Figure 1 (cartoon, protein in one colour):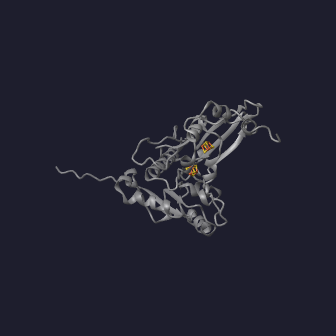
Figure 2 (cartoon, rainbow, N blue to C red):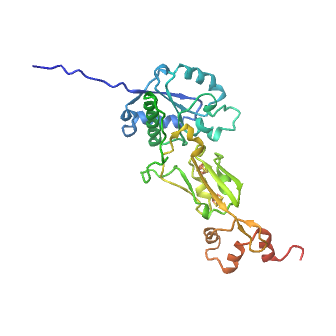
Length: 299
Ligand code: SF4
Ligand code: SF4
């Protein structure tokens, strides 16, 4: 006897995209997630839709320009109330390099709640898939009536084929507090502040565009680009996605004033083979160094 087997189909999760005034960099990367098999969102059971009213996951690109704001909010109001919102790239997350522009009204969280942040400028397709995967987990948890839990480690895959433009790592033990990194960071992602016994460097990954300039210009190698592309995270963890370290002060060997001594890496770059005299200079503050080198002022 022939039995008719009824086919069961699982409805795909629908992704809807809103561009709030981006440079299109993130949109091009999103195109990869529908045009390149290796990164196709279909592998996550998703497909793109042109209809805002059927959006299960909302992907937002761009820094939210003043001009686009009303249209963005109108479209957002059309999406279902239980959609999961993903901010794609540093622009919707923090405003990125455009954040001080008169034409920008973001970050997007000013106007609507965001569930997942995928920083990057632009984020790589791997990071986009990871971010969409994160959104699906949140959606599943909400449907089950439980509180979604973010990833514990925040780490991605080391050693894949495209090591450039990934998370930054900071080694405070070789930092000399020259602040060249902050100077070259057009994204304003690096901040210094005085703390008890030293200086703190904080690098905010939600603003970093992974240009690698800080690492390139750092004279001691204190900042380096890692192969960890996975930066997607629940939006609630926005302020946890930082690289931070305290650069300790040591007393000047002449007057006792607190200073950040020159790291051996810097001496090696500057002098190749530092002499004992040069070594002595590194433990002195600028004023004592001047006295040791050319004598006391006014003499
Ligand atoms: S991280 Fe490098 S560039 Fe930045 S302050 Fe330290 S030594 Fe200077
Ligand atoms: S890689 Fe360094 S210089 Fe470039 S945006 Fe990030 S923190 Fe700034």
